[in-house]
Length: 269
Image (cartoon, rainbow, N blue to C red; front, side, top):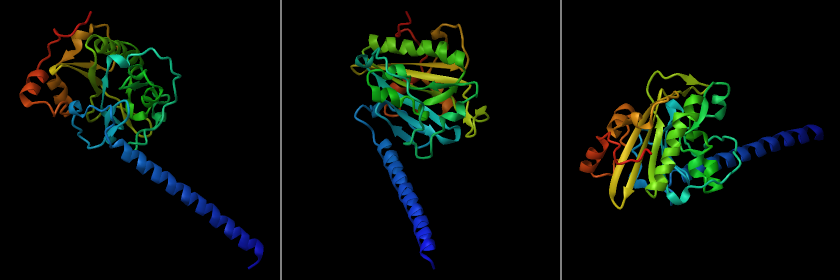
């Protein structure tokens, strides 16, 4: 065997060795990211977290989520919005990135390209404006769902602004939001990301142990209706989604609060 052939074989082996080592490191990094995502962060208020129907809860610094792989999106995203976190910081808008903490693999942002749907934030970037890192987290693909543009920029945006108003007025609120994921939904992209027909948002105010909550259910289209016309009970949303939203609450308190669709204790002015 001549030297040239030997050197060629060694070169090929080195290339494969380097590739294999890099692949090993990437898999090791991914395992670590997934493991870190399973651990609640200091900012996570686990008491008010919903149950997961999938068993795949991911904790980021600014929000937690339960990923539903068959629908390629979160079934819920939950976070606390404190009055002190309300900010007008003008961070540069980043590119969307795949959430590597999702063990089953989060959908690629390219599924939305030329789909006719917005990459609709579930935890709004505007609610995480107090810190650049948590702001950028909202651009992970596990935090988006296909939304009609007029809906995303219209009535849904109006509701997001109202949540910030309540966070300021009531010195912080807890927010849970997501699309209603059900069979036979339209899908987009190669990964078949489901397009919810409806979106929900649940807001809880815990004022020194005095809890009140309000839920909204909105079709994925713009509307000129007033926000209060979309108020439903939490029980209604639970029936549609199969999610137990406040499993840690005392059953008596939970039943009373979740069964009500009253909005009299919430300011819509």
